[in-house]
Image (cartoon, rainbow, N blue to C red; front, side, top):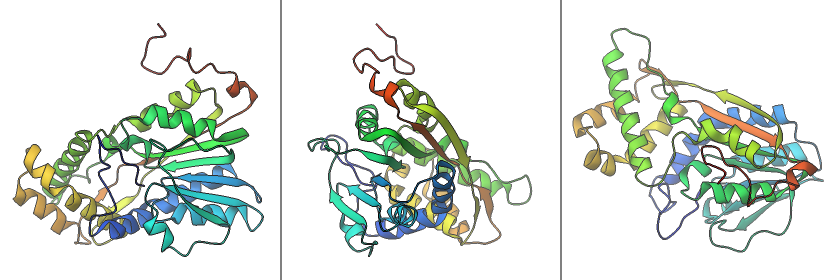
Length: 289
């Protein structure tokens, strides 16, 4: 996903030399979770879907499989370079669009999906307002976000020191992302945020994976840690030796920790959702007056 503003540049912009490899490892880690969430919702053949912050296009490809040749998928991103090279099915329309600065889209969709997108945006509530408006009556909004505070250490044992080092670097990543406007607790608020916008039939599915050294999951962490090496060393207590040791251990199959979970939350937009007065709506954690 890439959505940027001049005030708060998106942390994982595609200009970084290894960003496509990082995205590929993210897909390897979280695509199975996204597929399970889509299957729970039940995406019908012939549906129209919007994939916001489509990144490398893997979820757009899943959606194309589900909607079939009579359906339509719009893969939306402010930088579509990776999408253009992804050789996506013909029912996927690649569209360059920035929800933060471009004119709002005029159409609606049966499913509006965003994975690991809103938590990175300081303007996440305004963007979520747009996503709900883009969902057709009877359709669903599906949000999936990394619960960065849910990472678990390995079981106690000889490798626990390395697991604790991993946790320290992981926490430093969360701190570095927060400096750029990322909200690591947004996943916890998603059910309330959807309910506040009038969505109904809200449900959720947290999904975690084992991180074994040398796996796709481990590569995702290695790439993400490397991308944030400079701010981690500059602004957190983690030193270079600890940082480099953790990245090295993530290549070792004997090193095992549990990932932070990907939390998927969805809700249905029906006619009552349209009646929610946006100016009077009470937001989670905010007073009405």
